[in-house]
Picture 1 (cartoon, rainbow, N blue to C red):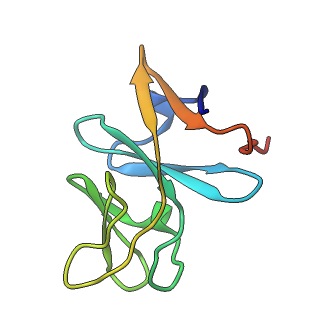
Picture 2: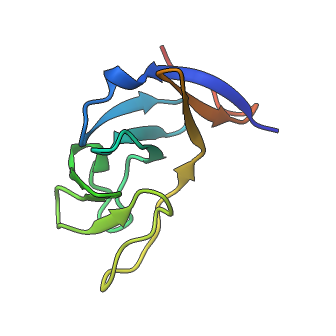
Length: 110
């Protein structure tokens, strides 16, 4: 069962930008859209493992900085004609705080 863990303040994630949360087994990119929606996905493009956190956010997608693949932030799916998928994580914002649903196996690195 997942536990909600406070991981950031909304203001810590730049609009149309990202912040990286380093975990024991994976780096998670937190993205903030122009309308203050927040998404959490694995910080690795399914194509050539480019750092999605360094990509350009537009609408609710991000463009990989290496080869311009577009990834939907909600589903993690590559947008056509490209094919592939990246892991997504449940995230919510309450009172300006960002929470991530973490399983008992996930441990944040300081």
